[in-house]
Image (cartoon, rainbow, N blue to C red):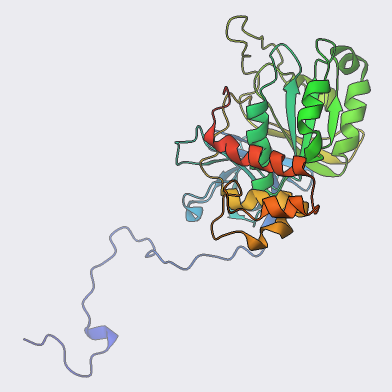
Length: 336
């Protein structure tokens, strides 16, 4: 039985009254063209502190962003109360495209990646030369994550008063990674901070390292106005330190332009999210030699064209060894 005739208009259509009196939902979202630009400084239990025109503003993520999360370093668009006054709250309505991403997983079997920091130019890998002992496998994993995410690595060796840096420098010398060696005395008198600051000027640098290596102590020396708690100790039995930083925080660098991002100490650095084919981009002297490689080459198999490329003198054999060591680090645990 036909309910309506051929020439039905809107007055003929029955509709249920809207008892709540509110407007119906729509999929059309506002463009927020007048939103202010900001940078995420830290994230704490769903509240984000953002820098907007020199003012620290507390904000929350808009519902329309769905599951997309903002992290430290993200450039965002905000609306709402941007005064930064107590008990005020702004809203993040857009997360801009990222230029780089430092990611990690809990372990190599974990399918869920975690973004540590966005839009950083550089990754400072902090390792102690003793107390606790260096963990080259963890350093290798951080390097792979840096190369994959588009960050330039910087190696910072602390506690040189307890052990010499020669062995570690030799291990990473063929990678052409800039490095800085510091001691406790130099951290106290400011000499170490000055040398590290030269590598940070004009850049956003994320600091990573396992607990107890002196990472936060170094950050405090670089940004003395924002001292973070550094009361962690190294366990005499396990050789591991206690976390003194519990959340990532971006801080403006003093006596230079740029930002430092202090991150919580890590005890593992999973690489389940890494595509090994992207690591070769960090080796331009070897990348050209991959044109003759078989499809989906792991660069560590008998038919790899890089062996012939190196034998012909196009690159240093030590560079190929370093590449293969980094690619293989995903197959090994940090303690191996």
